[in-house]
Amino acid sequence: MRAVVHLFQFDLRLHDNPALCAAISYATSSGVPFLPFFCFDSRSNNNKSPARSKFLIESVRALNSSLNGNLHIVKGITEERLKSLNPIAVFTQQEFCRDERIIVDRLNASRNNQKSPLVTEIWGSSCYELADLPFGLDELPNVFTPFRNKVEKGASIKSPLPPPDLSKVNFVKIDNHDSESEIPPLPEFKVDPRGVMEFVGGEDAALKRVQQYIWTEDRLKDYFTTRNEMIGQSYSSKFSPWLALGCLSPRYVVGEAQRYEKERVENKSTYWIVFELLVRDFCRFVGARWGDRIFLKDGLLPSLNKTANHNWVGGATAKTLLDAWKTGTTGYPFVDANMRELKATGYQSNRGRQNVASFLVFDLKLDWRNGAKYFEEVSERSGGGAEEDGRRHTSHY
Image 1: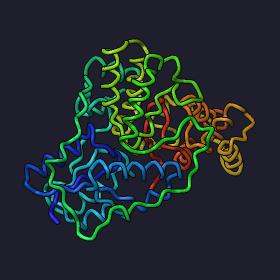
Image 2: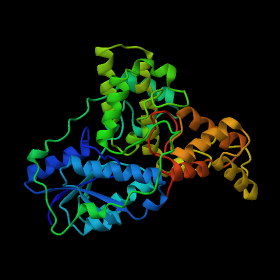
Image 3: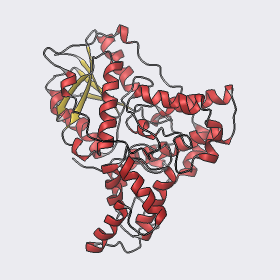
């Protein structure tokens, strides 16, 4: 098979997907078929909680439906399954840490001495384009506020791209391949009725949530004053699970916030949801600059990091404390309530996440990476930081 492939990984959507649009354009201009591709990679699926597995499966099914059943879905080792197709070119969203990059790096290495890489990577996961930053990546500020000031003054957020016109795409079909049979069964995960809401994966569900929160319920005007509340589906946007898997574009959210300001009201709340997305941008650009160094035990900047010089707890004591933190039995009611909510529902509020993480590091004096790993194992999405923050992988192949 000779085709142009788009490798879906963390961009499970059609709207505002620069890599997908570039792949389709290249295939069309080259006069060759186009193959959208997704692999349930056997190296990573065992690390996902039932909640996240359910959300991912729902998102892939929704993507296949949006592509009119043309998504080529497989299981196994992603780069091996891709190489067996012998594609002319592969397009994918640009990522930056080892676990996210291993597939691209191995595919490009398979080209041996050919001049051009097999994979074309295109940035598409943030509000601001990487290439549009008003400074070089090596000049990225070490903390958020200087970053925010510089990008707000020296750069602009582009309008989101529309979904591609699929009627003009020459999709390739692979004989005797049933993509639906490659999708894992939904895990047994019963949503606890005490949870703030049920999260359903996929682009359609993401766009419906944006419509519900911003327009139907008219919540954006109050976002700043309610965003740190703890229980309920409407006090904050809840966009983060969809942002984490790329079912929702952050630029689309910015565009809707700007439209809301023109059509309804402009105030601190309507700005603040964009502010939260800028925190997410900053985290992604930090990852792009430093790569795997963001996972160092003492952080990137020990001289500025308050946790760098304290004595980490280790051994049996660390295990006992970590188990108490995980199970919500520390004896601190606020921490325990949030940890029990996480275990029961796969979700935890932004304020809850900040407090339980701070408690883990500053009070229990435990390695933050153990907390991050636990969040990866049980949460609806692996996240932290701002309310709108997305995926921060800590698992390893």
